[in-house]
Length: 172
Image (tube, rainbow, N blue to C red):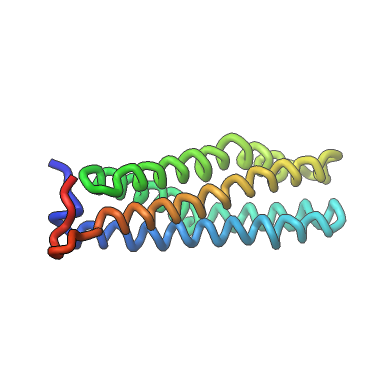
């Protein structure tokens, strides 16, 4: 039997808090990449941009970052499952879908191929500026999706835990 956050509030908090933290961290990180890091790369010479991009990619493959990316997605799914019988179920599901499709999906379909090409390059590719522009557009999608997932999760948690005027959790 699935846990119901209306009867197990400690489970709700145990999932909601780390999910919110993970979604906020990812939204902030991706927002930073869109407005600081990628534009800074555009301002460098092609050789410097390639070296910097390779350095960023090497740091992104250290264990903490992938764990945060995937762990946040798993927590969002956990909230969707645990909150299925609450008033916030549509919001929890929306949050998980926004994250998995917008962040993970875009990473796999847009960002990974470009990053792999950059890592494999020994000289700046002739289309480095186009690659960076495509990567940046994909990152905008990821940042917006992570922020939207955070907002949807917050609304879902708020609606899941709302009480009636008598102080009892609202039933479906």
